[in-house]
Length: 359
Image (cartoon, rainbow, N blue to C red):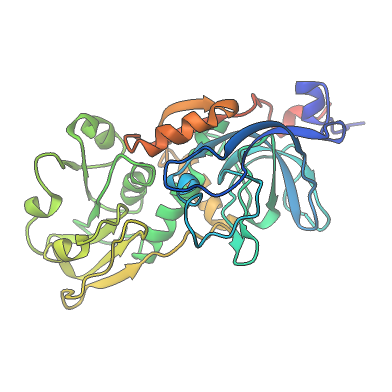
């Protein structure tokens, strides 16, 4: 007779039922300014959360840092109940399932963006801990092609890119000489966006980055990398030569500068956050889109990203990885503004797949 053995018993000699507290990184209050991490602390005695109806409990293997992780600490409009465990991106293994959960099972290797939230309760978060809660609806099986750390570097940025490019009409496989501009190529959203643009049919993918990153970005899908130290993308591109501009940097004035290069029938879409906006004088026939916020509630989007990753079209790039105890250092590394790809956070060494648990 086959029986299911908890991976925690095999790996760590204990189950979550016997684990009352966990290691975690919490914010104990809001920050006075961006880059102030004085109220972010590592603790070793945070209560392990318990899954409610339609929720799953994930034993976390890895997470990563996104700029929004430190930006939200100083935003006056963010409602946060302190102390609050931080972290959006999560990859790990299902430890428990709540009532009415039918899709995921104990032992599934999964990934998710814990980015859901509400006006009253603030952002969900919770990834920077040994255990994290998530709605089953927002959790997808992890790509088999990626390890936990690689998978944990992608959910928020890759979901953002996927949803932005879909809004811009992707896939474009039926179009010849289709050209996509990704304004910032080497950052967290840039690296997945270059790969997705190629996977979705763009024959030309143009981006801006330091010349020292050009080889990496071309390997990941860019066909032209313009050194922003020497010139602007818009100084180089001819009139009416671009179909899609994905402004993942979102600086003021980009829409006006880009409009000349976009073909009629093209799209300009930008990520808000750095005071970017649409053009007040758009070219006739050019559609402009304010992306808004990433929707992390739908696991089908992560399912699509899993398929891209397993097909070899989506690969992570992690510049540096920190332990959970050193998460403030990870925040400082991200805040420096010089990260290529992502900063990772390693939490636990989980190596088993679900099939391993049947004995």
